[in-house]
Amino acid sequence: MRYRVNLTLLAVFLPLGVAFTLAKEDSASDRTLIQASYRRPAAIPFPGSNPYSKAKSALGKMLFFDPLLSGSKTRSCATCHNPSLSWGDGLSHAIGENPKGLPLRAPTLLDVAFTEPLGWDGKFRTLESVAFGPLTNPANMNISELELTARLSAIPAYVDAFAHAFGDGGITRVRIEAALATFERTIVAGESPFDRWIMGDETAISAAAQRGFDIFNGKAHCSACHSGPSFTDGSFQDIGIGKDDDIGRGRLFPKSEKLRYAFKTPTLRDVARRAPYMHNGSVATLEDVIELYDKGGIDRPSRSPLIKPLLLTAGEKSDLISFLQTLTASTAATDVPILPR
Image (cartoon, rainbow, N blue to C red):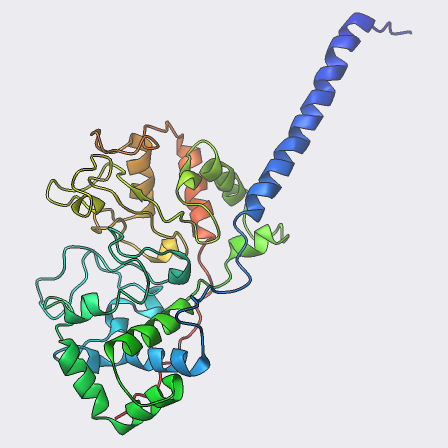
């Protein structure tokens, strides 16, 4: 029995088949390019005005973990930025010397070297400028510059550490800022399953997580702000949450309607370990975060044009969660230094 080939139909469907193959190849190529945009940088950026040195970083680490930096001598920088909690504190609002707490949650310090300006509202232009904000805040660390420098200067081992880092034993605000910033820049996210996947290990993450990656960079538009190796572009956005008196970056730019309720886009590194979420800790789980974005948040003039209903299916939401969980690195122990006394 012979089969007759309809050449007209063949002429139609052959190009479609070729186009489909090319589309699949283009799609794979697009994913490869997107993956490359998330690869970790080879080096940590240190500013020319405060270059890295081992001695300065070691001094900064001692200061970071030392409760002498608080008025009561009971709290350190690591209290709110705990390495075992992905350099956050797991609370909806940070708690300092004042037990009533602070208005915002403590942000993680993961990849902080790559995300200037700093603070939920971006009020700190550099990492060096951050330290004395919380240190001198009565509700936070509650210590004056004069008291802090006096405490440290009274400890010979600290004088020696400052001399080793800076050439002489003078202890000043600028040197404390420089040392803390140098150490904090070394706080980088560890290797996650996602990192192994984009470097070529196809078995590092599940098929669901790979679909979630495509949704993250496609239909859900997450990568419009959560882009690059640290999963943040450092921008400030109103995503449709927040109270009337909590206007974020709008405090710094009161004439800007678009910056009202705008808060900094946080890194998503270790995000599955860093609940609760948002600047005010108002969202309890990753599932709740996805629901918030899917609905589009509060409709108001300042809301980012990127925030709108996404119409995600239940399966797509599940795949997004699977992907976000791949950004969690293996837990690495952080040695607490011996503190000078």
